[in-house]
Amino acid sequence: MSTSGDPMDGTIEPFLLERYFARYEFAVPYLLCASDCETVTVDELLAIEDGARDGLYSLRLGYVESNGSPALREAIAATYDGVSPDEVVAFAGAEEAIYAFMRAVLRPGDRAAVHVPCYQSLESVARAQGCAVDRWEAVEEDGWAPSLRALERTLTPQARAIVVNTPHNPTGFAFDERGLRELARTADERGIVLFCDEVYRRLELDVPTPPAACELSRSAVSLGVLSKAYGLAGLRIGWIATHNEAVRRAVAAYKDYLSICNGAPSEYLATIALRNGDALLRRNRDLARRNRALLDAFFARRPDRFSWTRPKAGPIGFARVHGEEGAQALCDRLARDAGVLLLPSGCYGHGDRHVRVGYGRSNFPEALAKLEAALA
Picture 1 (tube, one colour):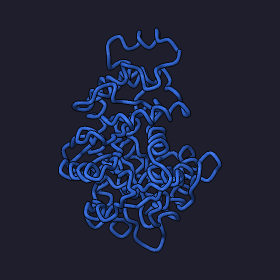
Picture 2: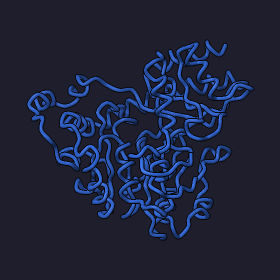
Picture 3: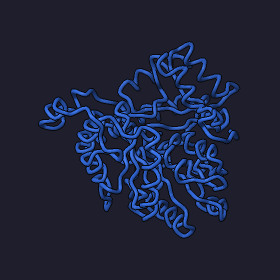
């Protein structure tokens, strides 16, 4: 992945993960690599709050504020300590927020240290912007923890951003508060923006939820979305939260060339979801814990084919594939012959020996049984 240039002239790198999903996601019955949690219907969501249905039916379908409606930004800000609604910018999903940040804040010749493996846009958009990307590797032997000392050795005077993802896609690693504070301190001491992808925040399974990056540093940027931990991907509502006024102004101005504003119904439903987020998150944490236990037992039965580091958080893990068959061939075969989709590590630019497994959906036990039968 080394192409650079402006994405509008076609020189941005192909998004390997999204192209793989375009091929398989809606063509197989069992999506065993889903990165999001179980969703709900509109009816179920409206039932959470008194008067929500009447509010939706009376909603005017005009434009909403570019940064997000006041009610939505208030609900997002309430999920953080010490963040005001004016310090939130809403986007059409997390992907748009990532794109706007990279394009608006980074400049050609800058460098960005990026926690990898990662969702590809966290590095590809920076590279297309003309930035050099220094890949900060998660270490499988250390429970997929990246080395903070290695990060410090990576940073140069041209470093403009540190990009980190916690809880981590695809490994399930999660920084604790001490690690996040050290990251924030490292960035602040060097005048670097810490951009923290926190789309699985509050879906910690074995560890406490640490403070958000934007709560630890006046310059750090926290990325959130309703798609993953909340399971509401169809609403397409993401956001950044930051005290950093320069970053907020830059990304808000760049959004004028993207979606301009979100859809009013999505923002209304997102506000309902966030005001009642504890219930949605509790349900998905419980589901992920139950399914992860099934996955533990599965891997214990198949040490000849897989090994993995048990995720601390989130609904996904990264399993190592053993044997002659590589991850890509295995995933293609399972999708074709068994209707079960795993995600090969090549979609992350991380070799051919790992697969992403998702365990946040209610049909996981059935999907896992189909996988085991196919392997047998």
